[in-house]
Image (cartoon, rainbow, N blue to C red; front, side, top):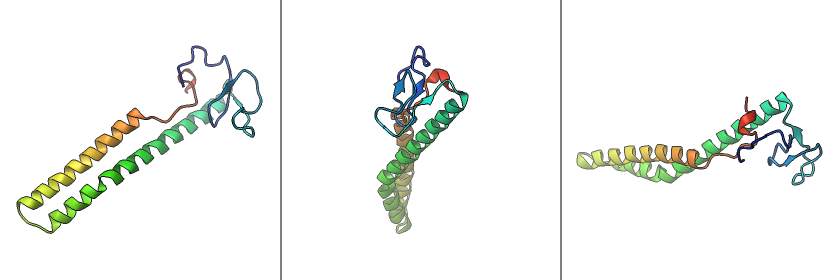
Length: 126
């Protein structure tokens, strides 16, 4: 959501999609969802918690996808490392370590690059 110059110009918002309106009523996209008033502090806290949960779900999902992507390298390096001695075992251990570091770095990059959309405007966050 862009940074609103006046976030309370349209004070009513849909808690599912973030659609804004000047007056109360139901969301135009979600006909059964009533719009909530951003001027109410409890509504702001509710939307802030929802934004946090949405971001946390996105972080977990991206982390799991990255782990699934590099897990074959980790498993193969463990199998090769356990079943061999000498240089091959050391190479396998290093491949596994590099795969873990790539997974951590990739997950962090993806989380920063693709954050979950926030409903609550920045100026209204508690």
